[in-house]
Image (cartoon, rainbow, N blue to C red; front, top):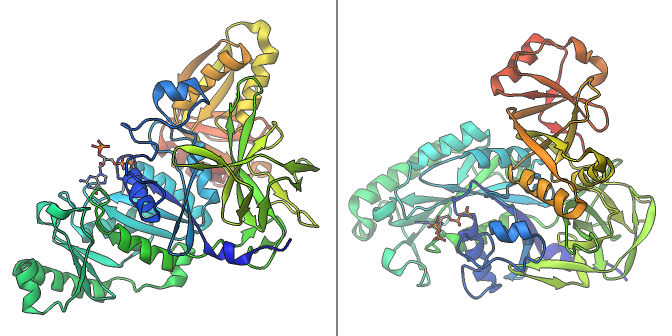
Length: 531
Ligand code: G4P
């Protein structure tokens, strides 16, 4: 069967990144409404008040009300098939959140207009820049008191190192939010708080020096807008799609997700600016979904505990080329063997459904009897080649872990090995000590709770976990050139090694990293481990 390239062309696969509470869930809901994917806003997972997803997976999820079940939301809109990848953000922020970005073709960055660029956005942004994917910015909550839009542009440029190109511009904010001005179309969409979210919005063509505009939005606002647009036209970067596609320039949109203002405009522009699934690098070349018609995909996330009795897992894969058909036989490149892909699921807002067809750009969850690892390649190409691996992201929380009952060494080792293979935690040992104690690292502190809980319930091992005061880890990029024992460290530095025996450095303070780099000119440190 030949690949249906038309289906692939329709795909738009992106992730929404933001700091908690900036409005990611609200924006996602509104986007889904346009696609008619859900009838009522508020049914997307992640809402503090919502009923949680069909979570028969882990008790801890239920207890804490955290859903890790949802992975992708798919809906159709104006002939496009849109996949929004879920990037867990609250307490369930984890390495998976970073890895999900490896599966996206672009990212939408939601920023709270009152707060600007916040910590988690910076972290996620850094991962996006690793891949040079296009990043679109939605400045949210304009219906509230906001910071000066020029100041916000400067902050994005300075803190994130990406240039900005506002596509539209806000007129006032909060109680005095009048609407947005589309710079290219020269139209105004007016905001009426009383009608927010309920009325179809009309855009009006306007000239900024037309006195009638002054009557509509107020003369002061007209004048201010005219000045600001003049300033922007003179000083800001033009919309260069080449730079957008490299991730050097971000198109910026203003709006209010809660009142559904500016969301449709954003979606329309976004769909025009993003591209269909992009080529992906393999170790030796690249796979282009528009040219190659074999099936290829890589695993970017592993979800354990679908069924406690069987220790089943679901491996989430991003399809990079071709078509998935239920029952197809593919090569598991890293495992060096053929596997049949039978059960695949797709996660919708709050349910799982079985799919028997999927295309490049789509994410599917495959039944995994425990053979797949993060970054693995599946393909039916005649000459299978692995995709470039997924980097290891820096944990920010560290703890020492020891088993309470030393007789259960075997279960303990098996448990942590398997959990580490799923990618929720990373395991390290102290350098040059024969100690039994291990060090675990996690991106989100909740992972420690999950780890101790799972070791107890699945492996019957009680452990003692003591958090360590380190917050930064660095990989040594050139270990062959460095004598680790001779590193001139700082008092808060600790040398550890991963399971492959590679040395890494732990620090309590960020400034110590720079100090160690200064003291050891030959040493090259990296925030990401090679995949
Ligand atoms: P997140 O997924 O990024 O964490 O944010 P989420 O959408 O849950 O939004 C966080 C809070 O901000 C919510 O209020 C939400 O209603 C509000 N919000 C989102 N977009 C806008 C906006 O454009 N304008 C205004 N004024 N508020 C917005 P909450 O009270 O914390 O939750 P809820 O009770 O509304 O669910």
